[in-house]
Length: 104
Image (tube, rainbow, N blue to C red; front, side, top):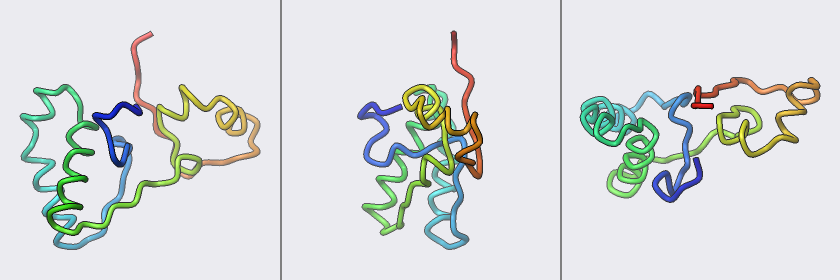
């Protein structure tokens, strides 16, 4: 989703990778112990993006978001039909294809 609540990174909470270092371990620790926040907001993505911002600002964690054409997610599925058609036609091949199930 592209609402402000996922700013500034708009990261995909369904697929990501982390470097094996202390900053990443600290980040994942906060994400895992933040299960109550995930339950209260109803959004893993909201908490992930919030913690990315916090850890980048407070601890200097370097954040890069995976390219959406190689690692597409729901936002691409719902809002970028030309790229989706390229996947269907085989002219573009993603590395990982992750979509959450949505109502309707």
